[in-house]
Length: 466
Image 1: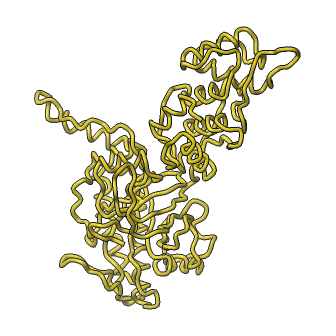
Image 2: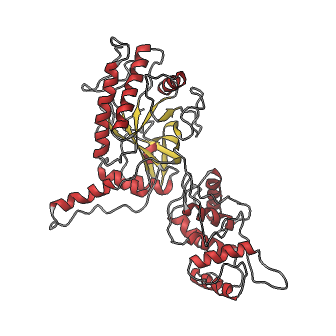
Image 3: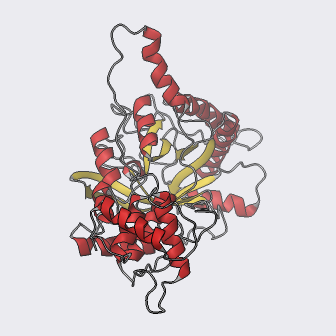
């Protein structure tokens, strides 16, 4: 997995998650007490969220933690939201990590990246590429008097203590998942396999005791199959990792493999490295990565919404509306949705009645004036788009596959307003249909079809480009 300086199978996840404005790195004034200069980063680390949390989407990994500029560009332009980073282990190819600091960790988490802290420590005794260094060592394959591979188990516990300390030093919050990278090996070598399983078991037990959750990366045909075989056999002498990260370079972005059964670590316990080392360019930045698909925890799922006392806002289409004329009226549910939007934007103070009355007409004209739209009694598709894109707070978080929350619903509804054929279900979660609809709209308005809504995309949605 590790390749230096190219991306390792886990390194592809490291650049996949996001860009927003980065916190300032300016030094404290010279007159400030020395304690103050230390307090800020300490407080930032204490506030770091658990990672990676609940998420369904794309990630990448690379051996060296990327520069902040690269992380920023990829957050704005790539499909990735998760990134694998090698934080510990004497077998790492990238022992030197010039960018990997507590400040780097805090900054990526603040942006929105989901971090996957990777450990590459002692490897299976039959793995031919290790040990890599003079002070590196393999997992001890001796069964011992009781045949329980007690030395390997102790090695695993010792390694866990070291890994947890490295994670805490970087500001990775307890409750986050640490991922042990066990490179592929000969599964048919009994002592090699059983000692590796004992090592992982000891590591898992100790890592949990130290407050972290446990995951393991390996080839689907060796290390992951080893775990699945132990699970299916119901072995009581083994403590399995809570999550698995399987390497299966079949080019299919899912979490499946024919090497293991479908019921293990599901739902929410798997991710898959589906594509090995390759170059990708996003936002003008080229990185050699491995690509991953994550389905962890409860996945990407937006909370229910309650707008204007339960008014329905989500529709598959947003047709133009107009005041009553000659016995013709606009659909009351859509008029209520429009009134709710206008109320949230502060231009309507009336009741959510569903009646396109004089107060509603005044509010429509006020919104059109605010957005520079042509003044009209009609509430057009363009007006729908601008009202949804502006949002109640005006925030413009990046939206890409796997994003979830109110900002995703704003995009989904703005796209439904842009075209009567889009018809997205406004779930608040950016799924494949949402990503495809974003790409289709981007082609229509002359943007690169990345499937990512960044600041440029938000500006065009607010301007009702369609």
